[in-house]
Length: 65
Image 1 (cartoon, rainbow, N blue to C red):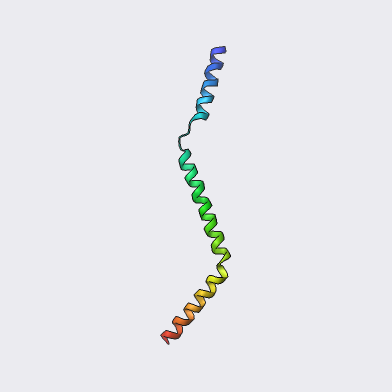
Image 2: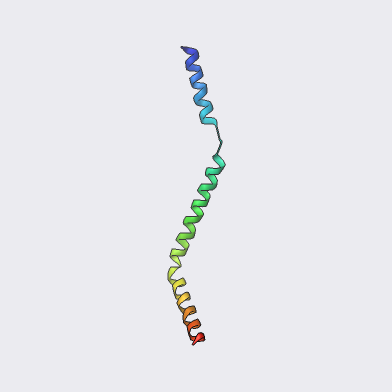
């Protein structure tokens, strides 16, 4: 019984010691944070961007007429 428990403990320790795929998860978290920052930045500048596009389209419309 003791040996079976020892094997179980070793199995659990080795299972949680594995670091396969850890880099992928870290890169995914970084990419997610960058995406959130980009969305937050665009939302903060949405009024300014809208005004810029309206001015540009007005200038192009006037130039085309």
